[in-house]
Image 1 (tube, rainbow, N blue to C red):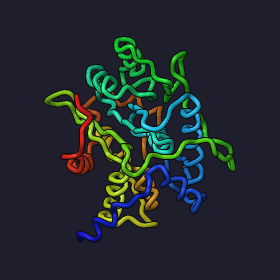
Image 2: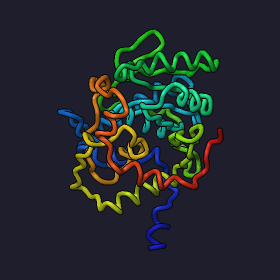
Image 3: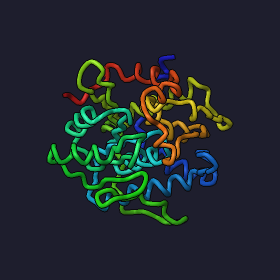
Image 4: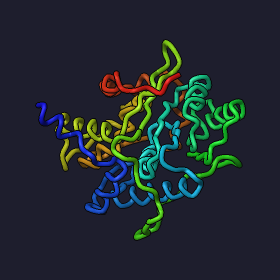
Length: 287
């Protein structure tokens, strides 16, 4: 058992995972999204286009990419694009209100923020704009999932097939931070648990092994999963790279129907509890 656990800790880089698999299995299906099917090559092309756009705007290794979205392909694209250029993914659960989101923005000072234009009766982009003005912070990019506005630009589309990108920076080293997961903030201000590339990949391999995932795995839990399950989302695309675990997530047009915590509770599963237990004892970004 000890040997098996130690074999999961390697010097691989999480930012290399998707492009490596895309080069090996370009036409293999990675995700099913409603009626849409996405191959490794298609997903990698989209990730690369977003990574290149961020890099053109000055985003570089160690910068934080804050993503406050319900379960959707765009959230996974942004996560893997951050990994691709050595930036740090900061997923923020959509039910956080202004005071929690403000704390995280003040803590991480993100270079990129992505949010939905609407979530039920809320307007997350407007809430974030007000917070940014109060904090005097100006991210390099604000991405809108939904209609763009003056300050919020659309996420880039995938590059045409065969487009090569040689100008991107290297992914983060194995011991560098790749992901910051924030606690719920129930009893105090949210705290950020930092996962480096090596530990994130070890968790992914452990999950694949524990769940006995293989090339035939079909993961259809997406419509039953909770938007609270942000830690599991943060590893979804990486799990799928090790085993063909197809995800069913949410489309942006579904966001306005997510009206509050009761709606979320109806869809909640237990997976986030398992993942939350795994991050206890990891370093935290202090508040």
